[in-house]
Amino acid sequence: MVFANAIYLWGLLGLLIPIAIHLWSRKKVKTIKVGSTKLLEASEPKQTNSIKLNELWLLLLRLLTILLLVFILSEPSITTKEKNTTINYLVESSLVNDKRMSSILDTIPKESVRILEKGFPKWNDYDFSELSETPSYWQLAQEMQFILSDSIIVFSRGFSKGLKGKRPRIAANTRWIVVESNEVSQKLVEAMEKDSYAEMLSISSSENLLSFEKDSIVMDSDVLEFNPEKDSIRLSTSESKDWIALKKDIPIKIGILENDTLSDQVQFIKAAYRGMSRFLDRPLRIEVLAGEDSIEDFDTLISFDDKLTINMETNVIIYQPNKFASQLITEGPTKNVFYLTKLLDSENIVNEHLPERLLDILQLRTGFESTISTSDVRTVAENELQPLKSKAKPIKNIAGLVQMASWLWLALLLVIILERIVSKLRKQ
Image 1: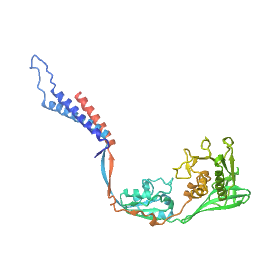
Image 2 (image 1 turned 90 degrees about the vertical axis):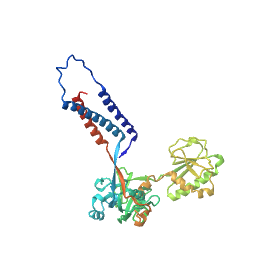
Image 3 (image 1 turned 60 degrees about the horizontal axis):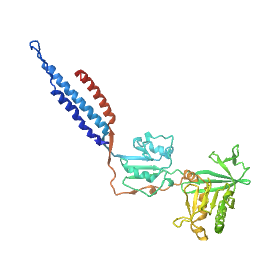
């Protein structure tokens, strides 16, 4: 037996209280003076024994009441040992609707099948109406060591996006089986209106490849479908009927607050953004501002005067020298504030990837990472999924805990009822 709050066991000393009261009450003898004993009758031995027996039962019930109260406060649990099953099967939830998987599961007892996700819920207890995302295979592999099974067979899609971190080393005997789907995922992710045509960016993924494709389609083509407001678009040839926003090809606006002593820095900034504009195939407008009063709505504002206080929701890059900084541009106190830690020159612009960092700050394609992750169906081979074998011995059995609190409360209620009944009969 295990106690969660063993300190309350000191309450067992309270058992001495009813014992002391019982012994004290036995010493009390009431003397009654009578003139004659002729009229007194001798008491029956059976009645005297019954009184003594009732007193002992009452003492026992009161001791039991205190004992149960102490145990309830201590929260006892009974340890049990669970033995290993021969084989456990783990199935990734995305395989539920796969016909090949259904034929395999028909030959396996459902009691030994679990879902490949955190906690490994049993097949019969799982809610298949809401399927989980791609699990982290190697993180779950470490938790498989605590499944009470001699061997574990894992059926998985084997998505490469499920491999995160270092390959684990575990003691469990596992076998990973990749169920190939030959799935090809295609999704339209961006549409940009440019003059008389629309530039459509889509993502395509198969078991071995993830790629982006950019197509230019004239605006009056039958392939394009527009919503009534003309601000969303979709392809009539696509299986997906989801609308995506139709963006306008408006220029990227960059504002530079110049410092007279650092005028050469403006030329470096302009060169970096112009190279970025050619890479993005987007128009770019750079304005050199005379002062803080001329600030407009810019995508990025760059200041070479660290004394200026700029309160804007747009991205702001402030020149603030820091010889201990490890990067050319570092993050500031808020998500839209950044610091330029060094003066620019032709060397650090290239070596420290200034154009790439400026492109990250613009955040032109926010949410692309989640879109790519959703569309990515690349897979890995079974041997790449298999964890390394540890020399440690696998767990043969594990101790479980059965809580006793509810049973103790029931026992306490019964004891209190019995104690009241006996006490009423003894008039105590």
